[in-house]
Length: 457
Image 1: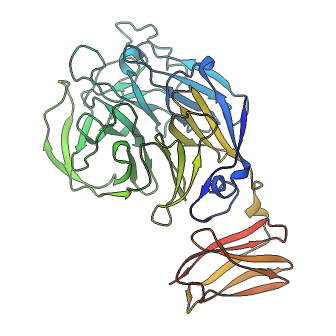
Image 2 (image 1 turned 60 degrees about the vertical axis):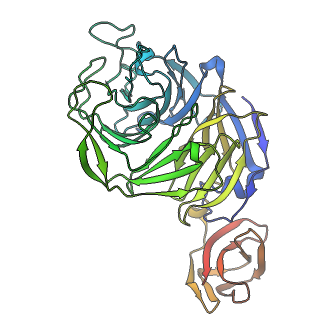
Image 3 (image 1 turned 45 degrees about the vertical axis):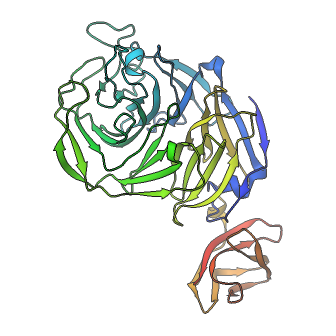
């Protein structure tokens, strides 16, 4: 187990939230960043492209790592049990017919029931000269996955639960609901929605109930080698799409659009429907600052993206029009090759490095857990926006001793004022110019007690 102290993150904006698990601590408190090496090649990490934590509470802190495999072999998974510790146990699992059902796997995504799916970045999973590949649905049950159909038989062709062969060059996948998954469709250069409906059972082959809808108005181009990962914000019904070749992030309202017309199928298999969808709501939310983004993750406040070309993790503020918050240089290695990224249950960042065959954790313990819950402060900032440059802080009780600090959007400290027994603290920002400011209350020793944003219109 190696830990690398890191202190080179670039602050390009200011703190937006300050609770113990707030991801901006990796930017604002970069001196406390550490890279932790969780697994490597001797633990089965060979071609890692993606990772995700198992979603159900009966198996906490279980991290699944997807290895892509090679053109003439199938991919496989390595499960890290107790992954939030420094010494997780590793479990190597390869399906009995991964050669087909996990051919050149590019991404994985868990459903709410613990089953999961992969996209396959290959034109023909049979390697026979046809266009015959698509997403595969897998069981999360470890008594089935990699056990049933291993080796494959006429009755059980591996342990997969379903596969529909309408998306060669699948570059990314994201779960929406039930057995519905979205695919970055590298063959058709668009985004495609798959509803497997009822799975056909381990190792079976019925696909006739599947519904596939292609959103051709969204035009994307596949990268020749890099994945393009995706994630669904299920609370707000947005699909976030990494467009690797364009250096963009796109989002699509998964509830929007309507069926247009039946499409000719790419491969000749029975399906309930294969059609185009039009009229969907989508937009490009980030079109600057990224070169070859690959991995993506979300929390309530931030969008997190890995940039393979620049070897950085980049944070964007979801509450401020996706403004860039800052960048973390991945300097644990001379030649990092970052792919997928995940936010762990411990609030740390987990990612994979393809060329160096590593699973990494970026951890930061700058703020003690529970600081907000134990803080004696109850603070209201009003009026907000400020009226004629005037606002105030109203505390639930007097602050005996502290410091009021105001920062501008560049991270420059504008003013610092001592607080001595005050409960109502006036603020005059009229001379500071119009814009957005960060307001902080700290102890005399610099411990952060509270922060908020103040707009001077």
